[in-house]
Image (cartoon, rainbow, N blue to C red):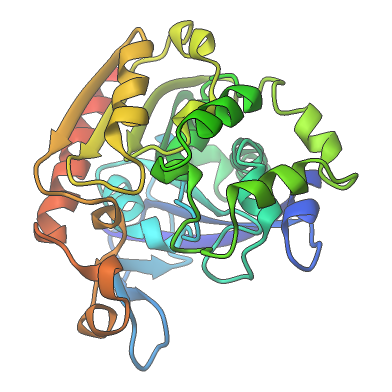
Length: 335
């Protein structure tokens, strides 16, 4: 089945405080089943002359196949992008889903990274909510969105966003206490995508007048109405959720982890979520690390990006496992 790709923008108040230029714009990408005559072209991430990642292929602004499609909201990881998750989104569109992915302001690979962008993680769920609303206002796309069959998916910090979008309650104090007690946990340490941003930087930013109103909203519900199923890959920052809130979630949650993940360590993130969520299933991939869930590294990527593109297991194999688990899971839960 051919896949189409369209792009759009929407706006949220939380975008302006996270974006380096204080723009309130949220970019989104939509992948969908396209008409049979659509011609796909390769999609890459990085300089056109020497791309760093192969994403897959899709047809820009292609006609949309008839019918209403189960719909997935997709959130990328820290410093990633919608297109970085295209390997997953395009595959799900090819399987018959309409997929809406966003570039989270202040925390994506195309714009400057900001402290606010990685501090206000729950605003990612608001980005997804705004993108869904924008697509439902799009006369071409809206007739093909089936909000009665709505799922959410995410990788790393995007896994956090997916859980928040499904109704998991944020508890910043729980996260602070965890990091005070476990300062060497990878979630509490500076991340490779923003090595100069420390845990203390987050605390200082949270206390500023600019971020304070959003910090007060952290414990509010960020749930997107109608989300019926959640699929997360190597979810991060799980300690920033209220454990009792995770215990009260009613949606089925499918968790995919890499046993060799040293960025969102399974024991304090995905495995912890699986213990608390009442309807969770978990699958762990041997020798798979955190960045195996990025788009496929090119030769240039392997030469330039070092650890991000070193994989003990072929990425295509890891991606295939993720796509297989997601398609089986959503087929069973978005009937």
